[in-house]
Image (cartoon, rainbow, N blue to C red):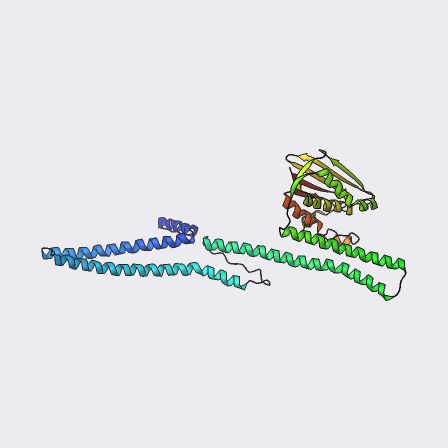
Length: 372
């Protein structure tokens, strides 16, 4: 009894691990073998019965042999017909059982729309091709749902960020046309409008960069470039902001004039955004330290600044689109929450590691690991 249970368990285990095509082939082979054995047994039985009757009657004549062969031929014809019929029924049942999960996949796939992306295909009990197909489709649906949700969130945030400067522009222009004003006031209001337009242009440019990166349309052109020159060039872009906040900037390039093999535009975009954040969120009269050093087979770039900092529970979100730490407390700080997502994307394209360590009102350290 125990042996039979063990055999049954092993049989079920093997059947579950077999692929669908192997199950069909195995069932057909077993059925053919079983029916062939039955047919052979019937033929042997008929042959034996007629042989015994002929032996009892005396000598065997040619007519007796012909009669026996006719009986065997009829048995073989009937047996072959039954064999084919049995195989047809078994194959049909196997096909029905095999296509039932596929029909369920079709029905569920037809029920999925952009408003209902949470439906998933139930996984079959047997790990065959249908199981792998269901698992693959479920994984695809997970990625599609994630992408659609991110797209909805992206659109919502983008429309909100555009709405704010547009509302400011509209308000200032409405104030200007209410009554005649002096040249100084006109200049002031128009200058404020120009700043809002610059914000919109900056946001559109960052959105285009980010979209182009995510769609894989950015073409990389690799070459050898001095990291020190790229850092100095990025600092020059924010020279006015550095002077306004009276920041002290220190660059320690070790080894000096170190070359990196990279795409100049992409790495410059990374450095521009990181230095922009370091300048933007530093305390007035603070210090921005930038140093490079060699570690194993990589060139390390470290940017440190003392400023508002980032809480530990927000560090995992800083690379998300439109996310701004302490956004409600930084109304006077310009930004759209797109700089670090762009940095993260370019780092992925260039195989550059990035790590940010920070605490509120303490030192924030951003470390780039650039492979040589």
